[in-house]
Image 1 (cartoon, rainbow, N blue to C red):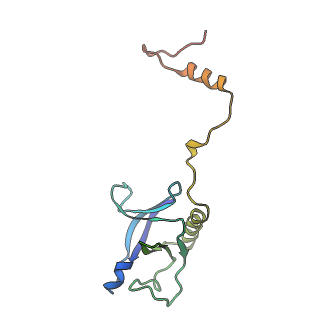
Image 2 (cartoon, rainbow, N blue to C red):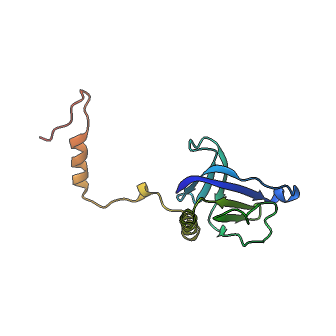
Image 3 (tube, rainbow, N blue to C red):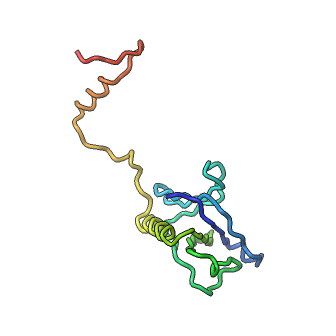
Length: 153
């Protein structure tokens, strides 16, 4: 799942500054194989702004009126957050989607990755089959040096 969303991050070191955090429009991508949520500057995926490891993260909707340390979440529609907490890192990323259905789809996908963990790559799954049939297909389509294909005799 991927798309542009308004985001703002709150790191432990941000508590010191007490300034108002500004929302940024970033390209956000959910990588379910590595169980990471990755924010990029644009669709080209050239510059990574941040990434959050989702296993053990907290995904929720902010409660109106709760302290958000300079981040305006009360006036932001369809807002949710992902909080990554560990011994070395305490970071909360807030997201604002354009519609309620978009928010629901993102929260569902993120919750599934948090609950199930990283997904195994699909290429690692082997398909059982007859080894002879597989080799016959390879021989039939294998190109030769002169550009012709092998012919079964």
